[in-house]
View 1: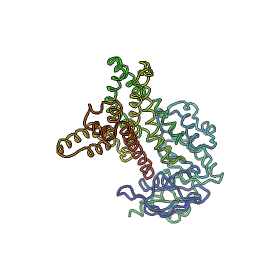
View 2: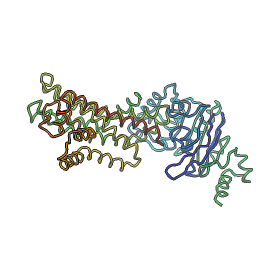
View 3: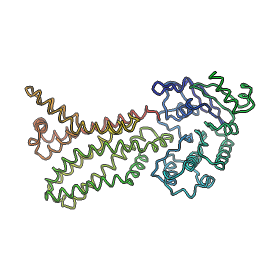
Length: 235
Length: 260
């Protein structure tokens, strides 16, 4: 589904990605983990074509990513920070994105699910962080693309919304989609992901499922296993 | 690109600043017409204002819009839209809304004052065309500056400096070099130096049309002598076109390589 071949990227002198090779299978939930600044978001943005890698190639659904960005039609992306043009209303924003992407979008059940009805006519600059994130989620899930990329989807969500988000992700997975998630909330990752990849200082440090990670680190608890990975590296 | 243009344009039309800009031009032309009591004279006075002011507004608006719409841009970048369409769409949105304010703000008072019955109509249209050209040029330059500078403060300073250089400093340097090298034949140098500054070029364009070129400055006289009025007009307009095209091409080029 997604093939990443030897990606290098540096910003100024800061080498963020140092040769990442990764194959993301066709179905299932794939979590990208790593400490802050390890290059998770850069990797995801490279897949989306928002960051242009210095070296290496990325194939999405067998086709090389191209500068014209039209392949993004098959990707639903949830950005890390919900930044929206402040002077637009929620309804206008939904309409605009629908118009720009074309195709049919089902937003109504999502709006109901996250109780966004009272905010539809409000301006985005007046919304709280959590509500913005809910709008962000609606924008991402209202399209039916085979590939979903979620960058820190849990930021700012209340427990009920988090529950709904997990259900949403499970439902999309059952449809046979590929879902790529980054998160710092280990319990969230543990609960939903089929496979994890751990990035450290721009390189892949571990790839496999949670069971394998526990075996490798000899830790029963997922959170401790990750901490163990980090500690071992720094020792 | 048209969809992006549409959203940028309507976004700007709804913003307060477009109205302030429109009101300013309305006020300016009404006052000038009231004081001059003559359309042709008002056109000349307006020219002096427009040639300095339009570049300033274009630069400031361009830089401001780029930095302010960062969120919008980031949202668009994740959609299946070409990068060049995003930036060119936004650029055209800004430039067109500015041009609209200019045309309406100057046009309405002049039409009310009987522009269509007057002989000044061609001079006035040329003034509007030049104003529009300057808007396109300086908005494009502003977008270039903003694309190269992540830092807002830096971007704004460079934009202001650019305007200051082309509107004020350039002429000073130009005059000084003419004085220093007065013993040499300077016709060609003058001509070439003029094409490197769109503000000078616009001034000459209008002066040529008003047929008072020889009265107002050395460059104008050389231009008229060199080209004759019609050819000079054409040459100046095409050079202005190049001033639009090159920065716009660079916007598309730079946008393709940038990381977000």
